[in-house]
Length: 357
Image 1: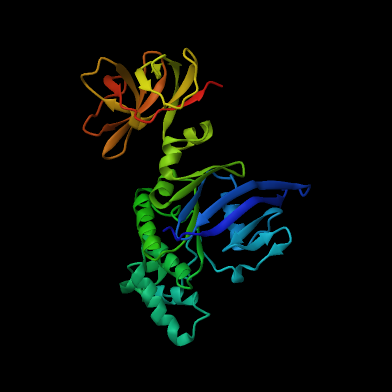
Image 2 (image 1 turned 180 degrees about the horizontal axis):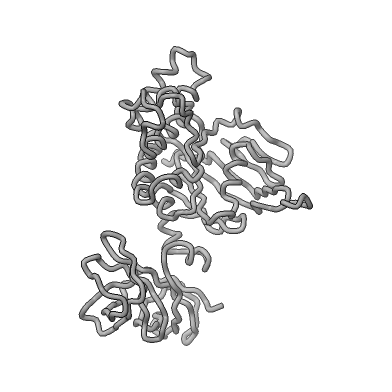
């Protein structure tokens, strides 16, 4: 039996700010809807300025909403006529810069959030939460003595210690080295899941989002375009924007065949059985880097025009005979020169298509 229930609900939320010239207002969030279940980790994913941080601030109670309502455990905490103070929402926050007190030890930073407990209980509780994030041995260390990842875990322990209903994380990995972000996101997911914490984070980095979240909302221009699992976002994008935003890919031209397939420059792909395209119709087919496989024996050739070394593999930009450029991940022991032609073939299992605009 599924015991999950809705912990956070946003219904038709609109958030506006005064315009920079003092005349009128600018709408940052427009008619936003989302639900987060007890124990889930959600993520708002989008480019800078899409409104995702405004949503966090409204959930915290730092910003009012002009329309719609925000509910926590089925109780309205924000609406045009309701604004429950942040201190009464049982919502924890991990800020972009962690916001640790530099003059306090890790233990004291965590204990600071335990003001509602008797003073004699704060240190033991703080130690317990440092144990839960694997930092009991750093209890007496000050923030400047900790690595960025350790500071992040102290900030997370401080947010979790008061046992809030919900934890919000604002770009929690942005100040860390890029090569560590995905690993640290995975570690944070383990900590949140182990402690059965419900969380919502915002980020512009899809790899962080995929590493930590159960549900992801792709945002643009103040709206959630698709709220779905990472797998569904990648393989079943609802529109071109999501398809283009998630994963590294390009659209190539295709012609629908009578056999339920689509013919593209590189060969044929099987269409989804539910497709509604007419035979002979020209459609756009999304090809991602993992849909193309390097194959020395293949008669299909493509020219290497750019390459990015990623350690285990290269990300090649390849030019087809028509001049169309596509991407391909190629194991790093295949180090081809710019201008060289290499053999490739299609390995796409999930075909994403859209009618031509």
